[in-house]
Image (spheres, rainbow, N blue to C red):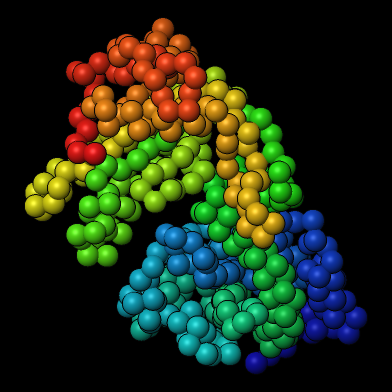
Length: 411
């Protein structure tokens, strides 16, 4: 392939290559996000004379919903585009007939001249798409992270004739530094993703910020919701294991997705129950909680219709709601901590949930919570009830029967 004397002139491109390497290794330490680093890298490459018109980074992730992600940059973009791919994508023809599959299968490099492919076609549809976009050349290399985890980087050019040998040498020399930089950022992203998945978004930020000392915490004013499934012990004894897991996942989807959508934070799943809070720093927190419960009940009603159609039992549940101050922080043993909330307000919410079995209403609200919303929401007073571990009887409210979506079944 021809060389570019201006690009390869002694003292010209080696200096620029060194400048970009130095920036990757030392100049990106204050940038948290790998997509921003990719954008800046491509702009620096173009300024150095490397005709990069498109670049991508492909990563496998540890996420409950997504197998991986792709970060894409094209000339003119100030922000990269991030796309996610679900589990099972590796079985599709599109992935199997792709350069990414070659790299993931062990190839050290994939190179393809794209000129003329828009008319001639190719077994890899990606190449045809890139040719139609005006790309003339494509190269992909692996990014080998520790413990055998392989990811992919790609560069495309729109220069007539594609990349020169000097361009490719320039880019390939960057791969070890880019691999190191991406691994550090990906580990940060994975840590955040895993923490958000297992302890929730707010707790994850607290932990990442260093709130890891046992006993550390803050007092938070919040509306507390505790939910529990009815008859789960009998179901788990009689149903096949996989069916029980599917049931629990569907139940938790119905309950938790509205809670999260309306600003609540699920702190933990407890067997067949969940604990969530709506911090009162949001003036509409209590109304948001009621909206979330209404949507959760509607989702459960839909799920129960599906269960009935499949000959499965209708699922009952109980929800207890209270409002008050809770201690929010790290609690546990020296070796195993839990980021959660404790306090009398949590205990009352739990007792109200248990009381739903006796009263036969799926949702019970304390007077303290009712006082926060009843000037805008119609509620029905059910009287005062003694609660275990609570000194005085607690006045209990619920939505009127006409507004309740379901009655509770079984205890």
